[in-house]
Amino acid sequence: MTSLRRLGVQRGDRVLVQLPNWNEFIVIYLAAIRAGAVLVPIMPIYRHDEIGYILERSQARVAFTAGEFRKFDHLQMFRELRAKSPELRELVVVRGEAGANEQSIERLTEPNRRADDFDEPAIGPRPTADDGHVLIFTSGTEARPKGCFHTWNTIGFSVRGLAKAFELDRGCVTFAPSPVSHGTGLAMGVAVPILTGGSIHLQDVWQPKEGLARIREHRCTHAATATPFVRMALDAFDPAVDDVSSMRMWICAGAPIPADLATEVAKVFKGCRLLPLYGASEIFAATACWASDPPEYAVTSDGRPALEGVEIKVADEEVLYRGPGAMLGYWRDSERTAIAIDKDGWYHTGDRGEVNAEGLLRLKGRIKDVIIRGGTNISATEVEEHLLTHPKVKAVAVVAMPDRLMGEKACAFVVPDGDEAPTLAELGDYLKNTRRIAVHKIPERVEIVKELPMTPTGKIQKFALRDQARRMVEIATS
Image (cartoon, rainbow, N blue to C red; front, side, top):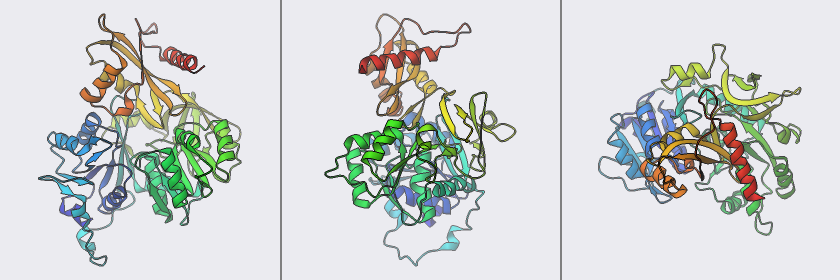
């Protein structure tokens, strides 16, 4: 905390962090919020294009980055971006070699300093619960990320409620393989255990077999991931070596829980319940099934209002949220804030749903044009805009296609510009190495078409393309 002050970080300054699920993330998080700074967590899969925009938008003063991780040189990327980011004064390297004009995390944390040698006055007064706490950028449906600005009061409201709903306390061990820089990972994998005094076990790269080994070794009691993680864990489970008897709940976000998945978990992971959590970076938690709810709720619904004080309603098929957990707004973007949060305080989720007589919400799809791959939103518009810069692409539409493991993947319908059509490998290489977007956004199927289906007003009929993508997957798997 004093080290951040020495770097010039003042109350309200933004501190950007792009790290895997490493212990250092939690240390930085706690130091930044004690200093009154606003944490800007960035998913490890983001690359030059996304991070450059977020640096410019947030005007972060300090950035923490890894060295090389999963064969990608994050430090070199930040060195390139730093030259274009005048507001970024300091670059701090975690698990890598700091160069000239860079800081190392070891130097800032001062591991050899005595525990009682702590200069509280040098840090300054503690921030209030209404001060800025975290700024989470999410793609949503727009071509560019939006910064969801939260105080501790907004995120803390959700964190306290989730701890109660899922019965977390000091004796719990939370297994956190989901990125802690994402809304669900930050809330359930970091903030809830810190609030309750429980333990956290982080996994930086999701590997189902390794994840099961860690659950056994550390006697984990809770996990919160995208729903596809559960399927992968079940497929990897070997009763001869794996022991998940400590697990009480696996919270699933990003996609509904299929009934057969819940049945299989109940049979294989005896004593562990699957519970749905529906939310967004703008609101963190909208609905959930509580540990005290009947088991059938988890497969017939996406839960009830997760916390006392939250209101959920459906208007014109769209799910609306109102409650203390809503963000203050999109960072320095009053226009998009006014679109998302109406004059009566209702946040418009862009999701379709219905509420039954018991007050349980069931999601019915999305109004927003997104692909949810493994619980992570991909903006179709953003990917389309990148693809349109390729010389062989005349027109393109990106839609979701169903996938057994990831829930959804991206399929690009491409109208070629000329006689030579681009290949999947060619477009993938272009997006990764020329446009330098995050790898998870790259379409995993390309279909070449003569034209895209249009409405009379000239809009692409994406529902028709989604149906076509679904049929192609069904034929391929039949």
